[in-house]
Image (cartoon, rainbow, N blue to C red; front, top):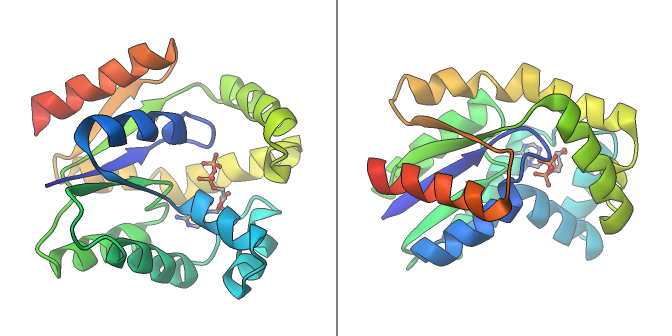
Length: 191
Ligand code: ADP
């Protein structure tokens, strides 16, 4: 079983690359951002709650996010493995994910981080906002807040996974398929 975390700042290409990795290794892709957006589009209670945070570029509270993530994993008892995209984003989420996977005799195989310079990310997100209609991508101050949230709450996870020898960084700039190949190389060499 392979359980991967795709790690990186907002706009670093996690969602795009997760689709290729999912196909190649036959994994289930769980994007917490996508699950929240799906709930928002269906006007569920969870969607309403998540929206109030996402609209500002804040993280959704751990308790809510963790509960949702666990429910998503439980939907796929026969999976070959998972790609977590956008989760974990805080130390609490990372610790609880380890405990949760342990309780199912599973574990994180590796965390792969897509490295992209912040200035380039802001341009990418603004462009994405024009096409996708994602309101959190349309406002520079919201984008900056997401980057600040990342630097404050998510970046500490780098040390968490490094201390488990599970952290791998790749250059996230270039052609999409070149980046996929960099990810495949890391997976194949370290499985
Ligand atoms: P991006 O990484 O491009 O910012 P995502 O689609 O992964 O976008 O996430 C969008 C928003 O959803 C985040 O800004 C945050 O509000 C919320 N969110 C997603 N994943 C998490 C998480 N693990 N913990 C808390 N909030 C989250």
